[in-house]
Image (cartoon, rainbow, N blue to C red; front, side, top):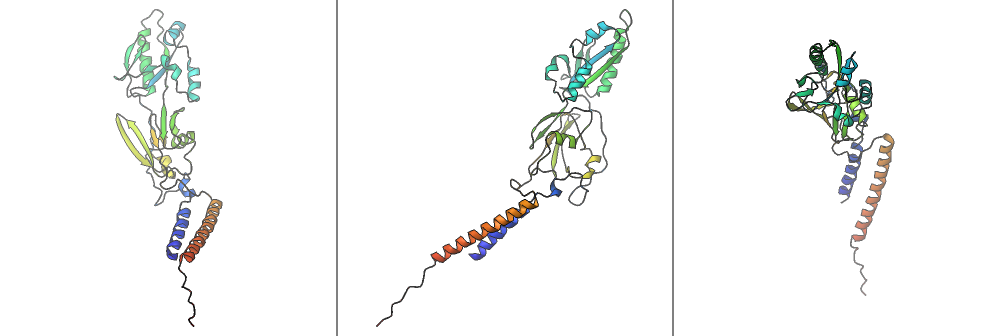
Length: 286
């Protein structure tokens, strides 16, 4: 009985101490070793290519005010749009003034009609529109063929589930994984940085990749930049619904555990002593 109590006490103490959340488990930019992976230098940022369901805000500049009014009837100018983008707006109020990439990969632009844009970057769409508009407008009286077009994607976002779940706007051209996690309030002490899963759709193919955000080499890898529509899944560290995150806490928990163990041991010993039958008293015979 005494042996079982000691084993139980030791197991409880070891379990509490092993649940310490050390800096190694939560710190970023650590040097790779046998526990923290090394990532080969595969960093290559690629401009986002348009997909079905994307929305484009397109603003046409021209020296002819009539042309400006014809193509920019939404009333929201480009500088206002850039300001909204900087604030991380999801542009819900601008749906009427944006162009949807439909199921065939086209946008329907005034006076031009259907333009295939799926798989193109915003720079390529800009060049295509300027060429189309230049040809079209050169045939009008006055020959105002010189136009400039600004193209912005207005629904760029990524999602995080498992820790600070939510959908967050990508408000800059290049957003890193650390900036994305910071937007979500970081991961907290009991969420795994070791096995972050990234769900990414590209060219119609969805892939799931796993990476360790603690590795310093992450900045050279394909995981460093977040792409629109990425889903980042953060799981809780197994067994860490309760943990110790500082030396002071560890000392306090250890002292409390020892005190509680001594108390339990004393109670059990008292129960054992009281429950043990005493030898029957004998009366001397005359």
